[in-house]
Length: 153
Image (cartoon, rainbow, N blue to C red; front, side, top):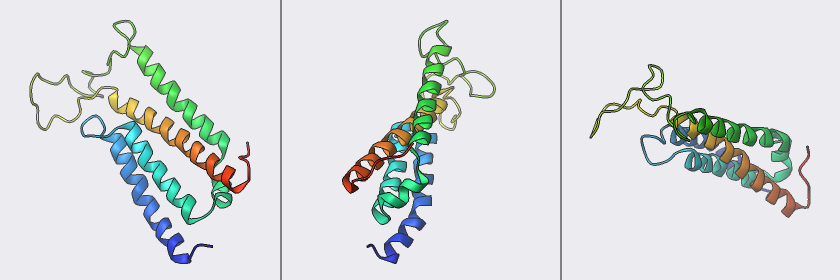
């Protein structure tokens, strides 16, 4: 049985880990990072909760069906954006240049022009959602297998 200190620290740190993971996902088109890296950071927080508490308690709040829906949603959004610009070319960034999703960036360095990603940030969110759900399911399944339990629907 783990101490109350470990559980308290894990409860306090999880919010910061989730915010940092979402920050990496959101700014992946401008800085090193993106959907996969941010998703892995979020899952590291879930692993921390798994270590601080146990798989039985975490299984109560995370359902396999919810993770499956999240992963499928991320994949569908990613594929829909990839096929949406198919009239020009596969993965055509059709949202860049629109007033909502950013201007067409000038050639060369353009400091201060941050909103030029088009649909790339949306794709980062889709990949992040898929990675968070997929890796969480794998980690939780391994933890439950090690403890001799099964995931529920």
